Length: 267
Image 1 (cartoon, rainbow, N blue to C red):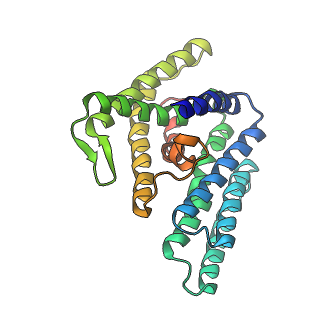
Image 2: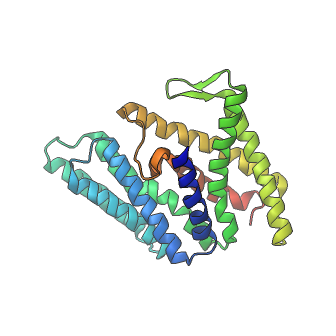
Image 3: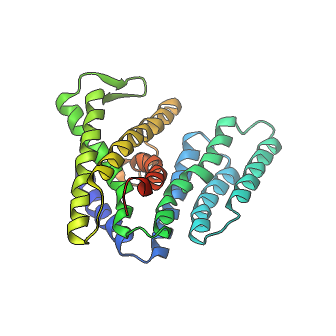
C-alpha cells in the first residue's frame, strides 16, 4: 500500500502537469520515454533481451516513432517498412536464433506502442483543448477502478478465467457504468468551467466504448504475460509494475478515442 500511495502521490501530479501545462515538446518527450520503456519491457518479456541489437533497435525506434509524429514527418510509413525488413534481415543473419514471436514483438514495440502513445499528439494537432487529452487516461483508469470495486462487491461470474482469473462479468459492467458517470462529470466540469458544449450523451457513449476497449487492452496484455509466465512487465512503478502493466488499457484506448472524439460531439 505504501508503494501504491507513493506512486500515486508522485505520478498523478506529474501526469496532470505534463498533459495540461508542460510545453508540448516536454509532453512529446514524456510519451517517447513511455514508448521506449514499454518496448524494452515487451522485448524482455518474449526473451529477446539477449538479442541486444534487436532490443536496442526496438527501444530507440519506439522513441523516435513518437518524435516523427511530433515533427509531422510524412515518411513514417516507409520507415516502418524499412525497419521490418531490417528486423527480418537480422533474424536471417542469426540463422534461426531469433524466434518469430521476438520478431513480432520488435515490430509491435516499434509501431503499435508508440503509435498509441503518439495519439495524444495527434489529438493536440487537431486542436482539441489540452484538458481533453486527459480522456484516454481517465477512461482507462476509470474503467479499471470501476471494474475493480464492482468486481469486489458483486463479482460472481468469471469474465475470462483462463486469461485473468480475478476479472468478472459484474466487474466489467461496473467499468462500463463507471466510465459513463465519469464522462458526464468531466463534461459538466468542462462545460461549466471553460464554457464548452460537450454532449453528455456523446461523452457517455465514448466512455462506454472506451471501457470495452480498455478491458480488452488489459486482458490482451495479461494474455501475453500468462503465455510467457511473468507476473509484471517491469518494476518502474514499484508494486504497480511497469509501463505495460499500468498503460495497457491506454495503449488501446488512446487511438480509438482519437477516432470517435470528433464523431460524438467532443471538442
